Length: 401
Ligand SMILES: Cc1ncc(COP(=O)(O)O)c(C=O)c1O
Image 1 (tube, rainbow, N blue to C red):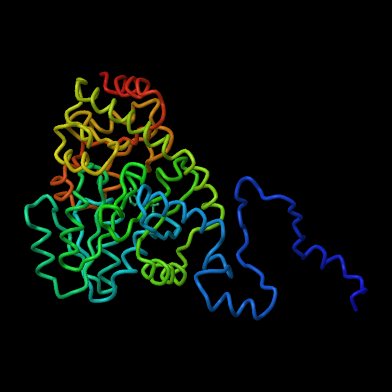
Image 2: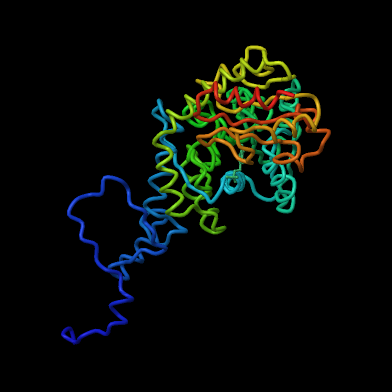
């Protein structure tokens, strides 16, 4: 039987054996949906011990897990704390996974009103249909968070915050929010997309979970869509979050994880240089004729500068400003930019602008937009790695009448 010749179709269909004499210097892409077992007994033991050994990429994949562990390591860098990570298909999937692994039907999510527009929509349109009550408040209002936590203290609660917030960059005191949350037994989830773990590490300030859109700075090159959830609690991460991800199928994939890792290698260099560029531009914009307002956490008179100074090592590479006083002024300005690109994302190597009121925050109640300074003339800028004088020159020529 062993000597029987096989047919050409069978040779075509087979997976050839890889001859590996030495380890690859760079991690390969594990582009396999399935992992093979040497025997049924091996399969039984690996299936029994999930998450762990590899069975199927939706459950786990060596390349994806290596990158998730690297982001977890970054989020607790400089401490002896351990953290666990999961990569998801997008930032939205990461936020949803983080929320749903700590909240069930009947629970309460307390959050700020000025979040990324997509997150607000998720909380308003999806969570209520799962009987999770979503309460949005202005965290700047003295005692508001305490009042709401106290009112619902008999229920299981989580707090979701984003700092700096998209697009007006208001910052929240992560440590103070976590201390208050602990007093009420509430969990805290922080969207750390804008700061990245190089500038700010919420888990070390008391947060339970961190969510990222890795589509932004962590990958940094605009070639990949993804998200990450990082947490300190092994049961939450390895059982609840992993089970949610596995069963909803919102996992990452081998290629995006590989791209993400390529970007992560330069994350520290990029975010620090981009933050320096943004700070330089923010200061220069304040002196520029035609700019009526500049929002940047590093400016000493920015409303929440004190919180940013307390918890961030640099002030980030996002800034917002008003080139005039009307929607038409903002439109004219953006349309005249030659170097900076109008594109609805952020965190890439080149400078991108977006008009929040008509793009990312279009679905947000106009009165709320107004309250948080997301005016019709506000333009958001994701500052890139170019020489900042070239970005300023582009802004100047776009302002010129
Ligand atoms: C702060 C923040 N969180 C989450 C997201 C959602 O990320 P993704 O588009 O990767 O789903 C975004 C998208 O812009 C964002 O700005």
